[in-house]
Amino acid sequence: MAELFSEIKIKEFKIKNRVVLPPMVNFGWSDDKGFVSEKHVQHYDRISRNEAGIIIVEATCISRDGRVADSQLGIWSDEHVEGLKKITSACHKHGAVVLIQIHHSGLVVKEIISEFAYGPSAIEGNPRTRELTIEQMEKIKQNFIDAAIRAKNAMFDGIELHGAHGFLLNQFTNEKINKRTDAYGGTFSGRMRYPTEIITGIKNAVEEPFILGYRLGVNHSSIEEGIDAAKYLEKNGIDILHVSHGGNKDEINAKPAGFDYNNVVYNGTIVKKNVNVPVITVNEIQTPKRASWLIENNLSDFVSIGRDLLVDNKWVIKAGTGEEINYCAHCKTGCKRHAAPENCPYYEYEYDE
Ligand SMILES: Cc1cc2nc3c(=O)[nH]c(=O)nc-3n(C[C@H](O)[C@H](O)[C@H](O)COP(=O)(O)O)c2cc1C
Image (cartoon, rainbow, N blue to C red; front, side, top):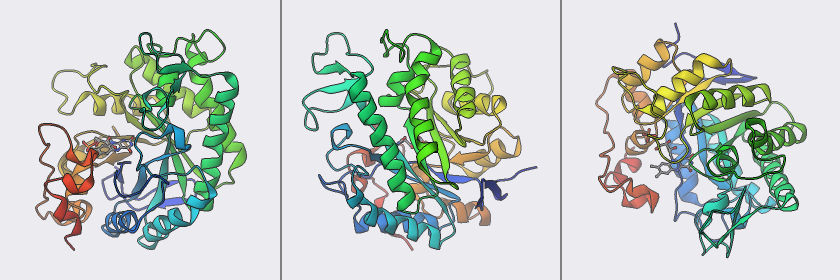
């Protein structure tokens, strides 16, 4: 039986336990140029030093005009590689496997970033939004591939494509948003085509060993379509699936009464039953007891611990020793770290050695 502290291998990469730091943006720590700062390096150093098995570095943008904020980390230029290398070297020093989430916002790009917001199709009643031409899609596809090559050059063990939370790739797969009538819309395989072409492009361009992860937003019209998407991604070469939502975690509510976790976790456990690649479940898992239960019952291969690992960087160590963990307060107005890490009421814990 696998446990929270069981080792596992993905390709050549040995992972020391089943705890993942999910990608979480640190707005304000970079600037308009998207370079890594000393704060980023210290942050990822601290979490890997405290034994997280996999670190997934925050959503990092593949093009300047696809950013979700003007201080988002960037990977659109070779100049970003040197700073990113400092993060991988810090994480590797402590024995973590480290991926980076690569991202484009698509239709939700804000006006301060770009005059128009491009996606699979324009949103009715929103004149700022535009349908991407095939030529523009080819350019963004190449941006994703170049970003993956840069990630490899920066010594990342792999990447995670951001296909969740309503961003560009998730917009393509979602039939409520993707209204295209060409080969990239309509049917299920039409809507999956663009992410799949990006996956193939990356597989052809980046040398092994390299982990190709996908953060899947299960918000297709049903949990069944989410399962189909997971299988499709597996068939097309994805090595690990991180099951999240498409922007609204309660959109797909299939969980049976008595399942003591939220819909997002439930969807992850269902995906796990339908694929052979490792699956990461996420969202309000919070405690070592809840995390262990998912692993021990073979409902998940990994658990992402997001806000609680930020509040208490020693979550993994304390899960082993039984020491008391400082938990996230779940601020009523939403997580204050979204605007700036320093806004978190427990920010000081991050620097508690
Ligand atoms: C401050 C903050 C930043 C986040 N940034 C990202 C991100 O960059 N990419 C992403 O896919 N999800 C992001 N998320 C979502 C988390 O990865 C995770 O799915 C979410 O926090 C739920 O897990 P938790 O309940 O363990 O915190 C972010 C969440 C928070 C609170």
